Length: 232
Image 1 (spheres, one colour):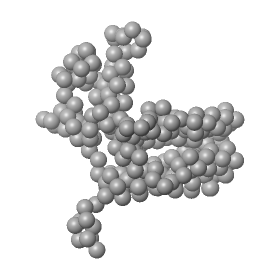
Image 2 (tube, rainbow, N blue to C red):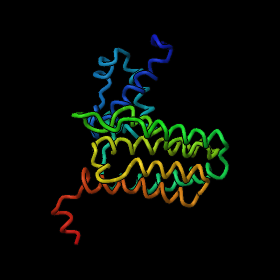
Image 3 (tube, rainbow, N blue to C red):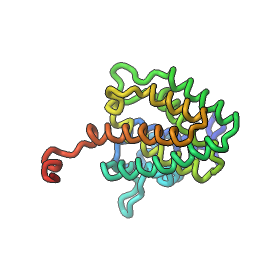
Image 4 (cartoon, rainbow, N blue to C red):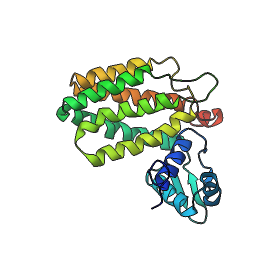
């Protein structure tokens, strides 16, 4: 397969660029991803773009509808609630297994990724969402918590769910932060995990994920007043 100057495949390059664009909100939820336009944008064939989009569809960041082509996934309250429930269950399981069987290398990685996260700038003035540096450090830290579980499939599932959650979080701007001590939440997770306190760490992770979801449901995805009133 043809390669770019860095030696990685063209498909990998387009995949990474599209993935980053979706997670940063450059391609909005529900918007079409047209092969011809993207082929021109990236200077590659439509076959390369299609292959990259198929990979993104497998990660549930892109959807392919009959007679409609590829689109960025849509977002909704129901999807976020379902997504959070699955993350709590699967990431909690991965964390528990990591605490029970992770070696010193796992423990050191949790500490190292937390160190980078704590020092990464959360936002830049005048720019929406969190910085790319913080987002990457945040994903690496949460990934580190579960990679000691010993199950490649479980790790893959948690990464896919985390990518879908990142789309929601980036669209929220700083709404998920509010008056929360996000640094404190991450520090607590690191300390409980490395202290091998499985029950406490899993509960801390549950609270952390649920707080973010609750903030989104109360801001970006808040129900219209008329709908909320009618539900009473």
